[in-house]
Amino acid sequence: MKILIASPELYPFVKTGGLADVTGTLPKTLKKLGAEVRVILPKHKGVEELNFPLHYKNFKIACQISQAYVDGEIVESEYDGVAAYLVEKDEYFYRDYLYSTPDGDYLDNAERFIFFSKSILEAIKITGFVPDVLHCNDWETALVPFFLKTLYKDDPHLKDIATLLTLHNLGYQGLFWHHDMHLLNTGWEYFTPDYIEFFGKINFLKAGIVFADILNTVSKQYSEEIQTPEFGHGLDGILRTRKADLYGIINGIDYDEWNPENDRYLPANYSADDMSNKSHCKKALQKTFGLPVNQNIPLLATISRLADQKGFDLIHSSIEDMLTLNGGLQYIVLGTGDRKYHDIFTDVAKEFPKSFAIKIAYDNALAHLIEGGADMFLMPSRYEPCGLNQLYSLRYGTVPIVRGVGGLEDTITDFEVNPELGTGFKFYDYSRTSLLNTIEKALKVYRRKKDWATLMKQCMAADFSWERSAKEYLNLYRKAIEKHASD
Image (cartoon, rainbow, N blue to C red; front, top):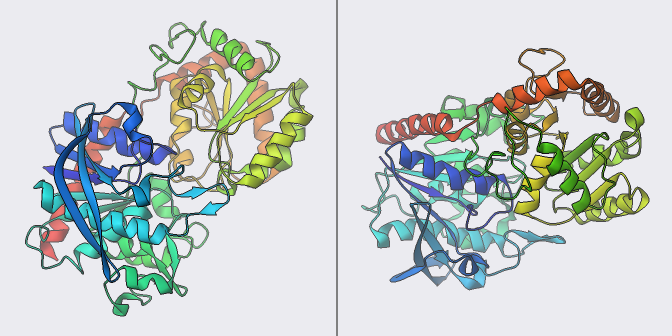
């Protein structure tokens, strides 16, 4: 089976969040399972500094955007044995940020990702790699199924390509004003509620939901949640019409990259059989963030986009009480996001310098140290399609405290409810009372060292390797091929 995975970001080339981890690791696992797989992404600023091979083979493309043709080039590369295509167009992609600055989205995002979507199809034609399935990810590539069944429907090179669209986060849909319709070159007949119109705007993600052969989300729980008004972000109706074609697959994680036994970013390695060196990681983490070095004080952490979706309004309302629970704790945050949270939590760190610290950045090495050094990992999300950090935390024996939504519900078993299988602590009500009560429960178990050691071992025994998930994706690809052939 030939598969092309299209994503706006992909690790190790570029990363802002979990999407890059998923789209970077899945191809490697599919290849091990015998699939012929390649990836395509924009050539973002910074790629050339990473020393990946970049092969220019004169793969020139031109994509119609409104009344003009925009030129670009497809550059060949590879990582870990996976062939990659990079769409080079510096005007669109050579920028300090991928989608938006801390002050807001790029004003030309519609044009940028219309070009990227069309360039994916032009790349197939010029490189000669014609996949059986084109696997699209999120709104930035969701126009591809739409274009395949409209502008490119009579193209002999593309007519047999099936599509799968993975919905990583329904909160980001690619909404643009209706005056951008001319950029699509498809005509106003598609600007209706049955197609891509959404409350007077163009909705890129909706276009993919309507036109892709098969859809999936990144957890079974989330695939059900998004069909409800509470979690559907206005798309629950159209998703219910496609219920028969909508599946949920939990993300895996790369245990070669995330493994405390050989993690190069840790000052000392450890395993489930010998966790003694985790204390060295905790000490290094406390020193790195300028917190008092103390093995006895509980150390919580969050690595996240700083946004309402991730529960930072709830954290903000709770943090003063949180820091004094059960005799006190330390709390570390790493991430970037909304400027208001940058400012809020910078002020909190100044007010509580001995118990709270934040670094506003994306820092992969520091993320590994946090997973290795923290005692607990906090994820109080409003909604969470899958979540990866709770899976990394399990691997490092860093006990998750989560709100039971989406993938957090699917992947974490509450220790209080089921001590023999528990892997963390969960709450459901989105309130400071529930959050604080759950942290307090976790802290009480933390003080019982024997129970905590048992819990850590159960966390580290959990298996969320990619092979299981990749096999499920292969089944979805087959379904997409069958669906495409029958339409």
